[in-house]
Length: 331
Ligand code: SAM
Ligand code: SF4
Picture 1: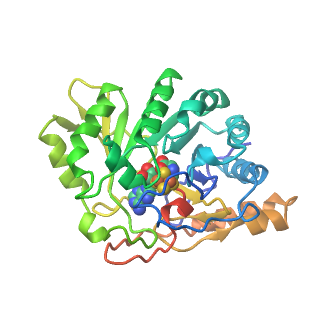
Picture 2: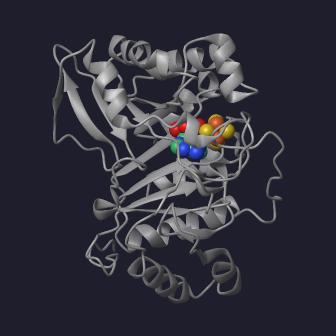
C-alpha cells in the first residue's frame, strides 16, 4: 500500500520524485556531460531490469509518486519498454516520465506511449547541424528532429525541450530555441551547466551563462510573466503572452534551489544519490543482491539515506569537486 509519510529528510523536505538512471551509456558524447573517451559500466555492474523494477517498487511503496527515467541515454537500454510497462502498473505512481536526447524517438515514441510514459523531455541545445555535431560530438540533428515529430504524432502532451546554454557556443540561439518550442506548443527549460565530471573541451567558468542573462535575452523578444507553474522539477517558469508555452530556468549555479528539493537519484549501478551535488551515496545494489528476499533491509537503508539528505550543494565552477559525470549521475 503506497504511503506518503515516510520519505522526509531532516530539513522537513518531502521526497516524492525519483530520477532513475537505467544506463550510463549513450549514443552521444555531449561536451558538457562527458569526456571524449569514456569507460562505461559492465553489464553485471548495472542493475538488471528486474532489479530496477524491484527497487522502484519499494520507492513507490514508501511514497514516491513520480519517476523520471534517465541515463546516459535511457532509450539505448535493452528491455526499457518492458521496464516501463511494469513500472506504469505500480499503484501509487502518478507520473512516469522520460528524459532523452531524442535520437531514437522516431522508432520509439509510439511504443513508449503505449507502454505508459506520460510525458517526455527532449534535450536540444541547437538547431544548427554543424553546431549540433560539435556539442554532441556524435549526434545528428535530423535524427532528433524526426524524433520530435514522432512525439507529436504519438500525441504526447506537455513535451519539454531542455537546453544547456554555454556562452560562445549556443547563447546566440536562445530565442530560436524558444520559437521552436512555441511553434509546437512545447515547454522549454534553459539549464545552467554544472561542474560534474572533469572535461577538457572547454573551461566551465568561461562558458557560464546565468539564467538572469538568458532571461534578459528572451525579454528582448517576448513579454514574460512570472508564474507558480511547476512540474515537480527544479525549473522556475514564466509564461508568454499569446502562447501555451512555459519557459523554465534551471539555475543550479546562480540561484540555489535546494530548499525545495523533492528529488533523489538512483544510478544505473544502484547507488542512491540523495543530492546531485554531493558525493554521499548508499549502495542499494549490494543490499538488494545480498538480501533479495528481505526488502525490509532495503526499505530501512533507503529511509535512512533520505533522512540524511544534504541540506544543499556547493557548486564552484573553478573546481570539479564531483568527479562523477552527468551521464553516470542520472540527469
Ligand atoms: N541522455 C538524455 C538526455 O540527454 O536528455 C538523458 C540524460 S542527460 C544526463 C539529462 C540532462 O542533463 C540533459 O538535459 C542534459 O543536457 C543535462 N546535462 C548533462 N550534463 C550536464 C551538465 N554538466 N550540466 C547541466 N546539465 C547537464
Ligand atoms: Fe548522452 Fe544525454 Fe549526456 Fe548528451 S547529455 S552525452 S545525450 S547522457
